[in-house]
Amino acid sequence: MPIEMAPIEAVPPPVPRPASGLRHGFLSPLETISQSVSAIAPTVSPALNVPLVFALAGNGTWLAYLLALGATMLIALCIAKFASYSAAPGSLYKYATDSLPPIGGSIAGWALLFAYVATGASTIGGFINYARVLMHSLPPAIGGPLLSVPTALIALIATAAATWLAYKDVQASAQVMLWIEAVSVSMIAVVVLAVLYRHGPHVDLPQVELQGVTASGVRLGLVLSLFSFVGFESATTLGHEAINPLRTIPRAVLQSALLAGFFFLACAYTETLGFRALHMDLGRSEAPLVDLSVLAHMAFFGPLINIGAFISMFACTLACITAAARVLLHMAEDGLAHPTLARAHATNETPHIAVLATGTGILLLSAFLAARGYSGLDIYAWVGSLAVYGFLTAYGLVAAALPFYLRHKGHLTPAATVLAGAATVAMLLGLIGTLYPVPIDRPYTWLPYAYLAYLAITLGWFWFSQRTEQMSRSR
Image (cartoon, rainbow, N blue to C red):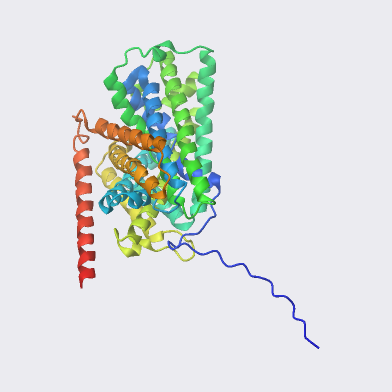
């Protein structure tokens, strides 16, 4: 009599772990977009960038932000097109290497890494600035001793905390960043709406008619406005970790850029309007949102917004470390950096060595300037200006690479070609706007040369690594 055997249940095969060693497919769409939103740091622009743009563009501040939004959306559409085909932790670097000659991919990778590290150091400067602001608001018995803390130590504490979060768990980092920005932006939105309500249902004619606005002022303001948007693409660094990345990441890139743009436009218009009512110069205000909260009869919101800006600076640093580490990991896999940087933590499944390396770079840059006695605002402005060069370089190369990538895929269309051309021209114009007219104030005069020196070093390293590889193959 045959023996009947119980059917063996099929065991589903384990989900293959990506070659990078990163945890696969666990970040929700909301957690993914929080990476881009935090890198943009929407709380920071109304507090620091809008007054700087107003000092140049005056009543054309809203126009500078509108033009910046248009340029950002052009490159966002290009990046979203790439992201709908490819998901990798190298983000823009991966897109460039897939389509451009090796030297083009190398420049894109090093420029993007530079941009993230510089932005992280810049926001550490902003963190220092708001830490001092909050210390001054405390009772003397508490604030006095805190004000004696060296700024370099503040930079160390903030960078170490952000590095630890990025090292430990990217999901926890994403959740922290999401809630930080949501609370901060909500408080600013309430003040903006209150000011608009008090103004009544009519437009501000000096702004609409661009009274006293010059073309050169708007052009220079446009460059600063672009800095408000940089980082919107950083969700692309989570290609292995996002759920359904080919769908989630393109949406995160486009939504973060568009929503941030509308928010910045509302803040630029409202701050210009509100300071006219206050008979104050927005371009010289050190705490514009505090002044607006007084105008809106919501003075209690001022300190809360300062706290929000303080925390938002930290969130931006965290987002920059998260993004930079994944770019560095992918570059190490391609031989552009030491192989050790391509390792992922066995338990945390984060690029822990690359996290430590990028966190150290941010700390050295920010702490060095802080130890030299420069203010947090100086660090924010100087290093942030340096970051713009890196972002515009990477954006421009990716836009130029799009037609080649789509042609290889067999999906190139006239519309895509026009989009890529327009985005490339926009990035070139933005880069030219940072260089001409040549800044006359130090250290801005030196910044372009510092960036070019950095690129020269990375190109030298690229040439050396290529030559070494060729020699090893010929043996």
